[in-house]
Length: 408
Image (tube, rainbow, N blue to C red; front, side, top):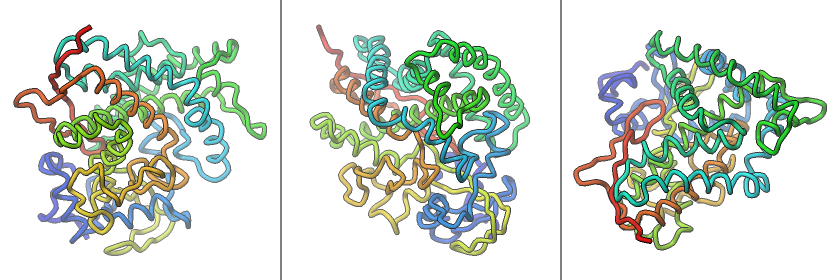
């Protein structure tokens, strides 16, 4: 089935302005759509997207990343499968969970958040995107890797270019060329740093990656560079939008913001509901290894499949009142929300579940806690509407707030 007038084209301004209305029509009437411009099959129902991500039969591969990611990152863990994927994931995963996260990186997260907030805590107003969320995760990752935070502007430019490349559904040649330049520039920056770090190991994540070994397998310079590039992009763009999203959602629902301010343990529930309700990434692609039957028809072997996370996360067959933001809902648990068994789809599922999910959780918990402490009576600036923007990744581009400064 091709796209019809009932469903606006995913590359159209109408879709970008309100994808959620389009998602509802897709789920109900056109759960499988052939999209000519992106040469992909679009799926939108929760059960279909969940099946693709869990993929017990190896019917859905990540071979699409050869053209979607490799030109800007190089070959990454996302493209790997089988033993190669298992070993590479085992090499990098310990840094993002357990004692390393709590003891080595949580103090670093807390410090970076505090430094940014100190710049505006007395002003009574801020743009929490420009002043905080776009800077915080990139600064954290730079510190984790032991890179010079003075190069923040370059890191931000590179990750913005990389995100534009993978989001380039319309095939804009200038965006593609800029992404490929980013790969070259980032490699020229990182390779000397990696070589120096191998000779002078420290306590940072880059040193850990240089020294890590499992069953005789170590990461070479290209592996490490590609992972660092992916980390800056995935960790920067998604956490930026997640922080902006949770704050916008709470301020648009003042009674829930008041509950979170009173009971900070609810920050996790608010984050999980934000991941469901307004996920930072709205679509992830896969490629079929065989003809596969899904809702609405058959996807042929070798086809690209566009999985609409933003649509699946609002499927009424999975969630009650899915278009309502509710941190108290009982059909979305927080206990497994940061694992491969999550009830939402924002981090994918299965073997390619986001390795940085717990890092994102630590950043969001820390950031929201510190912002609430520093900004009593935080509210949206008069007349300001935190409109979401974006199609592939999506979130507020600005979040102007006012608050009562804390007096010394």
